Structures are given as C-alpha cells and as structure tokens.
Length: 242
Image (cartoon, rainbow, N blue to C red; front, side):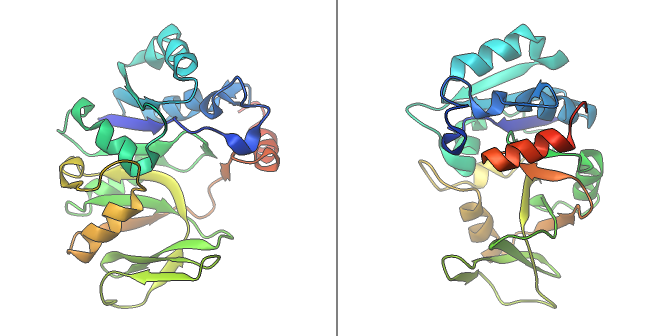
C-alpha cells in the first residue's frame, strides 16, 4: 500500500529550533520525526512512501535518499512557493498514487504509538468507506462530530463554530482528530477544491453528499503533537529511547 507523510510544515512555533531544521526532521527519542513515522507505516504494511516537502525541502529529501527510503521506494511532492495544507498536499501528490488500495495519510509532527495496522484493518472491514480517521478523547477546542453513519460536522469552540452538513442519525459524539487517516483509493479523484486547503473541507462536503468517513478510536494510545516547545519536550520524555 501507499502511505503519504505530510512533512511540509514550517514549524514557526518551534523557532529558533526550526530556523535551519524542518519540523519533520526534529528528533524525538533520537530519531527524526519523519523517520519515526515512516518506519511505523512500513511496519504496518506500507511498501511505498510519498512525502510532501516545502520548507527546507532539500534537507528532508537528501536525508530520505541517504536512508534509501527506509527500505521502500520514496517519492517526493514538492510544494512551491509554500505548503498547501492537508487537502492541497494530497491533491498535488495525486499523480504519484498507484490508486490500487486504501492508503495512509499521516502528519509528520505526531508522535504516537496508535495501532496503525488495526486502523487499516478497521477501514478495509467497514465496506468501502471513503475514509477512516483516528480520533481520541483528549482536551481540545476543535472536534469532529460523528453519528451512526460517520462524520456529520465539526465544532471549534474557540471560534464559535458548530457546522453540520446533514441531519444526525442516532447519537452524536464529538472527538478530536489524531492526524492519521486511511483513505479509499478513489478519494483523490473526488477533490474539487484548489490551492491550499484543509482536508476537512472535502471531508465535510462529501459527508454531506452521503459518503462515509468513519472514526476509529485510539483512546489510551500515546499521542503528542510536537508543534510547540513544551509539547516537543513532552514527546521527548515519553519516547526517550523508544
């Protein structure tokens, strides 16, 4: 299967650490985050990597080539002049996907031990959903809304947003997203958005049109976003030597 790693982030909140080092190359447990994510994806069955790059792209690309793709073919989708966000990155990389099986999409700045193989298995067992997204119950002002049929909206308490794209079917649960997806191979062809955009835009548009985007709960898994200095230090403590 293909796996795409989102590695184009600027890491502005980690400066000066990211002045000369891409956020995806920041080390946790003595290993660059990109490599940590890549090796976990490969262990879960990925036999081909697609990595988007932008800020300090050469640093990432040279490292991956020096590591021989961590043992699998590795392709790069360079975003110029700047990052295209989650959805735009996937659209730009669309020609690189084989399109023959569900694929992983994984943020490079998420340090986690969530069970990737189980996430993939849940997706393939669910009867061709458009996507399955990892979620976990944690403190957050931004959450996705799910009912018996899957994604139906999102809330952002900080901005007063409560968006629902269809009527609820059964109880509604609000859960923060964990930055890891499994997507059907047909998903990239359904993108109509352009430029830089969040993947939540097509997710919500397509959920409103009847597509199923399912949650996969990973409560109890270690999960740390390294985007801020205090979060990075917490991840380094949690994954020291791991």
